[in-house]
Length: 83
Image (cartoon, rainbow, N blue to C red):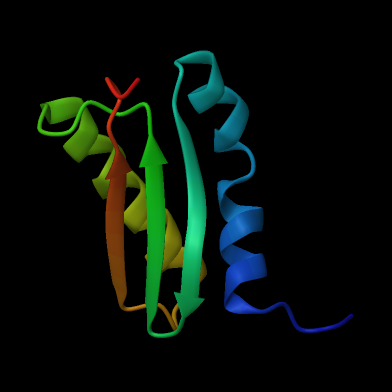
């Protein structure tokens, strides 16, 4: 079995979450993955609210657990209220 890249491993880890997020009008996208750093774009999240922080913390926990070569996650947010 071929070894998965970090990006593939992150995509596989996050795949089960995508339908749940989509139902809530949210999405995430791996913008770049160059270990030890990954950039994740969040769409539909309300920037400064507590739930947004909870989502970020949960995503970080999942990625760090499944992808030990990732040490830093940067989140960029697409404005939920953008036209």
